[in-house]
Image 1 (cartoon, rainbow, N blue to C red):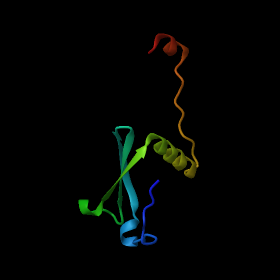
Image 2: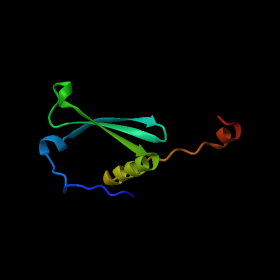
Image 3: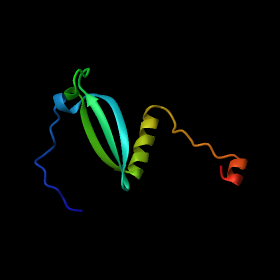
Length: 92
């Protein structure tokens, strides 16, 4: 893996780097998923108050992130119901 030279740790700007999560959506992007998250530092009054952040994740990263968020919230991921015998036999 190639190393990337940096000038030191990135500085955090509270005016730019922190906010409340307003919403999110995801879209397929080939073998990956694109996760769009929207945030704002204050109650949004105009479209300029809302910032979009786009992340490309592998499907494995998306699963790990989802499971992590469930654990942090003290919940468990929902399980898909196994089809009943009739549905399995007749393919419904």
